[in-house]
Image (tube, rainbow, N blue to C red):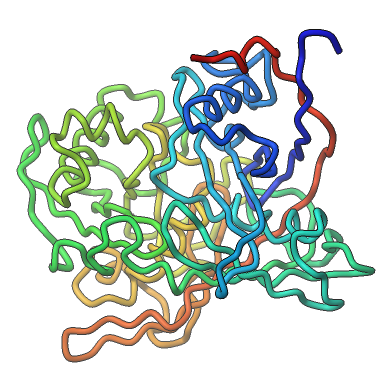
Length: 388
């Protein structure tokens, strides 16, 4: 094709997100040029991403760059990118558990990892966090299995169960351990909001937890209800930005919004009650979950709940004194935390010990499914590679 350069690409659904997976060695080595190419692949910036592969939604404008690894503790290296929709920017400050669930299958199917029949354990070094993640991927006839009987909320049908352990990612974003402020709960004075209690926890992802009732909510709201209230979303972003500055991840609350739109996340913790699954209309019973939560993502409500955010929330329920811990209605020490989110339930496996002021995360695992939707070539204008 004259005037265009072809790049191999895979569109793969991982968990409740969908992303474009690219091989590292097919992208430019220069970071600035690489990001220009990625933006062109996705069709950004444009609200519809009409000229690229992006899905015009934060949950479908995600990127995985995967390559082999020379590290003795890893099989592959993986970089996650949140591709701006209306911004000419790729955000690399965080990680996505859902997109991570597709890295193992992608690596196996692209011969980056030797496949072992049954279960192949893929050791993934994530460059965003500097941590290793373990993915247990079902394999049949040398390829990642996609058929299976595991169902997950927010995804139609069933698939092969992929178990991902994030226990080695404690403190990855802040570098300060699971409680980066040293306190399970802090009281902040937020401009335009007033005094509010927050819990900041850093396990797999860094999240900021508030009580739903403190901002006039129940925690049972749908994404549409929250996103259609600009006054509320501004208040929630003000809290998130102030807490981001407070924990040392931004120079000012203003820069927390302009420079780090997607991390840390803000999560709203409810007290319980039944609610309607906003995707299926089914009623979610309070007996089916241990903690009720809604999560903000890129300044709108997540339609389900982020994979790494789920890990963080599950860990927070086991740390005494945090807002999630005080709202947790499950069986402590059972190893299972069931999170009620807008589209159903996410179960998380945990093994966390707290004693003598120390918090040890021995296991923090989430089960996901993943499926390759398309493999092929995406075309980028050749003139772009003359970027200066």
